[in-house]
Image (cartoon, rainbow, N blue to C red):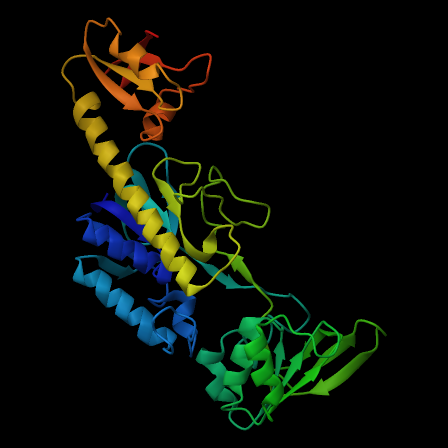
Length: 386
């Protein structure tokens, strides 16, 4: 191990940066690891108009301020892609190409990547007229004709940005005429933009060209007719996929790879949290990512406090101790622990506040078993007393 931290955050988008701010402010030794640009996908957003309290800003400006805020609390931010993670045990191991870092808690804030349709010509011409980021590549299409695939917020807003450079932007839309998946304000602006036009009830069937995009094949989903259409570039905005393929299989994900967490951003593995667009959630916005990051870091802080207390009081105890588990949900459970006749020091454990302790010793309280006690020596359960 090259270095040990209290908290490691994987991903420096809004969720990761917010978590870093909260972690640093709590005096946790905090490291943020990012594989590309600090700011994540939000950094590529040219205009942000729905961030509370700031009527208009840009992705670079907002996320750079977040990063500076985190650094102000002593947070380290390193550009290092994470290759793998080992989550068993109290110390989590984060492996990059050059280093191995240890952490008491980890927040996964890796966000998403652009979905690839996989149609003929798409992969072959990526970087040769096929693109997925308007902020990154729009300037290369000065006075050219560009096709945009998709009709959600990202597609329409990025399409309007492309019109600042391109002579014409044609949007391929799956739906009937006049129906877009974006917000109403963006739709109204797009319809009023003289450089934008739309092809309805259609999907992209192929990207054409040998060394450079020269056109596309468009399929009408109602007639199955395929039309050759000339253009100089294609931007795909057809959804996002979570950056979770590299994670251990033991982390709970749905069939599409989105991480499952509870309202504290806890995954199914103690000490591992997820925040932002990488988790299964209803709304993926900068504001909701920041909220997730704040919650995850606060929950991680309390987990670390419990972990340190457990190490001091249980693992490093010279004599065996008795852990008495109780819950405020079951009246009388605390009395049962208080009346316990044990030969060693008794540590009362509220399972609603120290769930990790209960999980460690497989304690599950219910109406039939409202309290439990375990004799522990050097962290190992020796005997069940109650």
